Length: 438
Image (tube, rainbow, N blue to C red; front, side):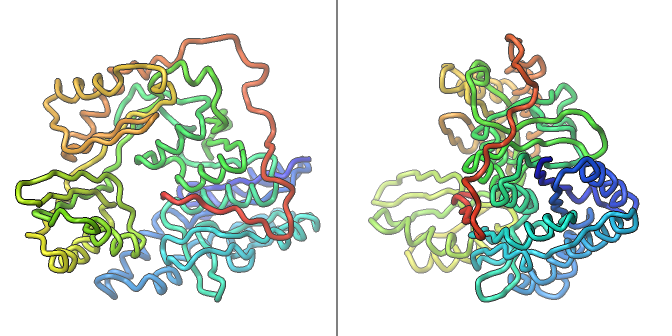
């Protein structure tokens, strides 16, 4: 008998018929004796509908009230799911984030999990119930509802798996696993059987939408094997696990893009100590994540500062920067949200030379200008004009032969990794702390 945490996304529970189908799938595990914890997102389209409603009320919706509104989507889904299970003759109970005591910080709409109290869930599991938890939400220490941002249900599921010492965490979605790139963009995209936590962290941070980056961070920290698979088939998906030598043999594992990017340039900034802090502190204090930063020196002790932020934070950042420009005596601020970031990722880059230069040549051959470059030990990212995004992805996928996959070696003893050695023995309240990024 295993303790299994399963998460189902919005497309998996998009209507009553799909909710019933998911309930049947979960009950199949329960009937075999497994202890089941299910994390659900809002039904597909609901979160966007709430965002549209909020924007009709305020130009920039109040973050606290936004969380109160957005949290209702998951509340509806878990209640309907529990009803479906009870109608089928089994017992289930739905729990909201504040009932589970998923405690977060106070950063509304982008909250981070600080602690999880597993006691209530364990009591219901001991009573033989399927426990259904609202994804994407938590509560502050003083009782305010919070939401975890887009993809937050993945984070809820993996954090619960760590806190409960689950045997495995399954993330169900509308695709069969993690692919070498978006199959909707490149028809030759190939499903990856196994991928390392570090590679998945990079892919998630760079725009891959299969897993939220914070969920991968929890999985890596607590060594939770995560199985990404399709709701609609029984096919084995992709296991996100610890790195092994076979993964290092492949220089590039995937190509991804992020269109949620905006570029901002502050021109003629006084090049004196403390200026960078004056620019970026007001941004980060609002929970806005700054990604790439480039500084170009000018004559006369002046410099231009260019950086990227999520496109969804573009207007807010521009408002902040207009005030900052006046405070620091810069010439002005300009920006563009018609850009995208294209990236290649692979742990094998550590042992293979020439990967970045190959990427630059491929983009050059396609007539694609590189606006900004960022690198790490296992990734290279280029900011380009958004209109060239799909062309760049296909060209890079072909250039690194990602449709063929790594060379086959002797098969492992088992296709799936060993059962989870998850978090240390859970106390009444475990404290998985999200790493900073996002």
